[in-house]
Length: 77
Image (cartoon, rainbow, N blue to C red):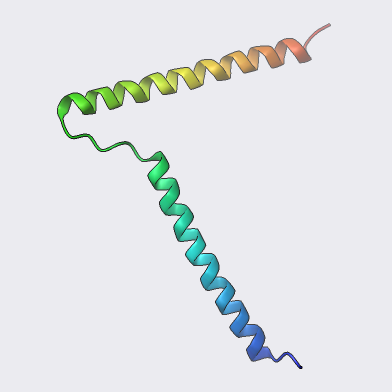
């Protein structure tokens, strides 16, 4: 069976449509994972902000500790 240009173009279009569909699904999942939680009151909104601030602080401190250890490891004399 010979493959024609039309067959190749049809396959390409189908593959592009599948890639776009997959890309949209990945975007939705990423948005669901990283979007801030919906708060139903003022106190809940404050607690969400506090939680986010603690997570940022924890991440920064972890990064600092890793950098110190890497420097200590690679800068030994």
